[in-house]
Each structure stands twice: as structure tokens, then as C-alpha cells.
Image (cartoon, rainbow, N blue to C red; front, top):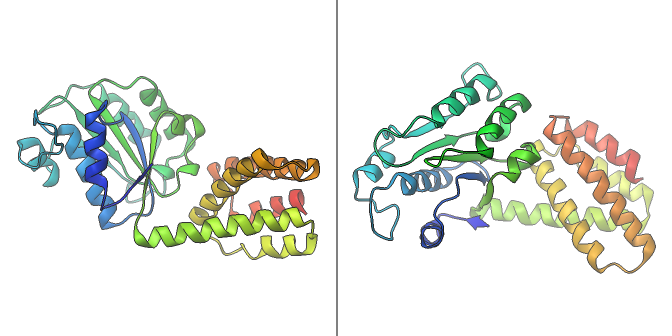
Length: 267
């Protein structure tokens, strides 16, 4: 599901009309002031003390503290100054603290910024908490590229995509690139395929991760309607290749090395 600065209130209203907020959420998309406001609103809705149907109510003590960034039950975890990854020790602290009852109200929230920069060991520590979370603890994993998270972590979370005007345009470009890549591969023109793959050399890891996800989804979609056995064989080969690409991305393999894999497998 998608969320934006225009519709996040409707999203929250719908959630609390049903079963309430997800215990674990991955909020994808680029960091921005708009995204930060949405994260803060989601956290406030969880610690909101109102008994009414609108959350966050913006009037109670819980909401006031949440929006002033002083709520004792909202914890923000981010990269340490000297680290490029979220560490095992940080996630161990989260795991231990998650089982401690809240200070002010009924719930507590952990906002994990740069969640896609958790190393594998840290993700596995967090996974143990996500598998059986305390009833009062909620987790918001902020990740520009959720595909870098372990599949087991992703499976325990609801995925919400933050969409801004700029990211919507970027997403359209990724979708178009994915279609062109698939069409070039299906054409059987090896020279064109090599040229296309090489043209992706300067693509950053986040964009390449989004492209990988788009190609996987589109190959599955085309497989459902393809009747030609040769086309189906090629689509299956492409899907399997990009499944491997997804694994490599989660291990922080560089884009240039992944392009070498694509050339070896698809040309």
C-alpha cells in the first residue's frame, strides 16, 4: 500500500477502524521532511491516549509529547556517528527494552531509521523480536530500499511505500526501464542486451534495487499471459536471475559485479 502527505490521515483512520496499527511496519521511500511527519504521526497514533475514533487526536498528552519528540515510549534508533551500519548491539538493546512495559501509556514505539543498513547479524537479532513481539511494542522500520532487508524480516512486516511527487516520477522511470530491459532480453539481440546492461553501470544501489524488484514483478506478470514456450522459458530464466540479484543486493554486492552476472546469464 502507498502513503503520502495527502492521504496519511485517511490511512490511519482506516487502520483504527479495523484492527489498529501493524505491530511491525516497513516504511519505504526516500528520506524527506514529509516522510518524517508521517512517521511521527504513525508513532503518535500508537501512543495516543484518546478514546475517540480519530488517532492521533492531537490533543492528548501522548500526542503532544510525540510531536514534541519527548515521549518516553517512542525510541528512535539510527546510525552511530562512527558506523556505516546498524549494529548487533543496537538491536540487542531494542530487543531487551521491547519487553519492558511502557512508561506513560499502553504502548511503545521503536522507529528504526536506515533499517536497510542493518547488517545481517543485527537483522537476525531483530527478527527474533518481530516473530513474537510483546503486545505493547510496535516497530517502524524506515528503509529507502526494503529489498536490502532479509526476506524473513520483510515477511514479518507490513510494507508501506511513501510516495512523494519526486519519487513518483523516479518510480515511473524505473518501471519503464524494467519493461525495456525485459523487451530487449526477449528480442534475442545479444549486442543490444549487453549495451543495455552496460548502460546501467552508474545506477545507484537504491535505484538498482527498485529496478530489480520491478523486473521480478513484471516477469511474473508476463508469465501468466505468455503462451509461446520459448518466451515462457526466457521469462522464467530472467526471474530466476533477478532472484539471485536480490540475494546479492542483500549481501551488499556492488552494482558493477551484479551487471557482470546479468551479462553472463542473460546474453
